[in-house]
Length: 314
Image 1 (cartoon, helix red, strand yellow):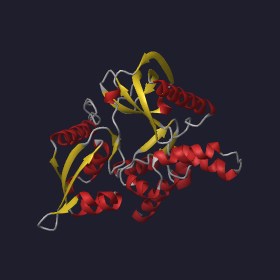
Image 2 (tube, one colour; image 1 turned 30 degrees about the horizontal axis):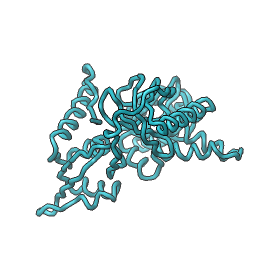
Image 3 (tube, one colour; image 1 turned 90 degrees about the vertical axis):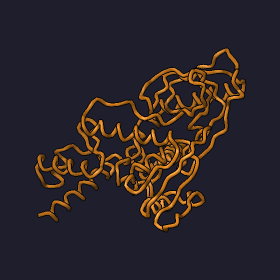
Image 4 (spheres, helix red, strand yellow; image 1 turned 30 degrees about the vertical axis):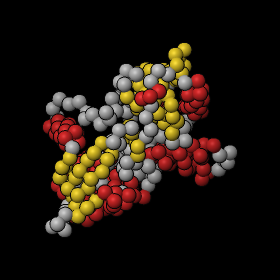
């Protein structure tokens, strides 16, 4: 009985990742179970660390799910890589079934739907062109209707754009209101308006630093960790470039990881995923970031009033 249940759970995992849309009834029919039993299986997946997403009447798995993410990171493209490939496919003049299938898979698996519609592509192209013109004349611009994934708000941002990055997917800007250099996703900008004002803060335009977790920023944030055997092995497997920043302790059972990062997001995810095998030694800002993440997760688990998301970027 348990073996049959396990087989159904595996089959459900395959269905939720096979690039098709299924309703609850369709999933139940494919598994030859009742909808009530299907909901038990879905709850089991959620309790096992998978994020089951329901869009309308359809179900799918979030590739950022615990466990699934580790497999995803090792064998699947990052979202940036997927978006780059999708842009290359869009630029191709070929029209065949394989090309259409690849586009559909990339769109659905990486949640790129809508990003490559003719209207969206035209908007992105216009934004890039306007940003380039503003940089040539060193003009201030307003990023109209910028949708922030961190604060989950849509607002206008007054900035000095000075660098397009990642094949024009991102733009690096100095934002006057926050007095900080930030990276903005061009696809999240509704429109770009050039103002009749020239740069006044060029001395504050900073170069980017990219850490071993592939996050970039203009500030180097020091972190120091004490790793057990499991955390040490996984860090080297997932981020081989971390090797120069690792040093063994005298007990030969622990290692010290000491490095600068551009963002707490990458290192934070790693620490939280292996918290039983990692001790945070430095610095106080990173300790507070981890504490805020834990508090936020605790609030979600307990169903209490949500707390403000931990502030990652300076």
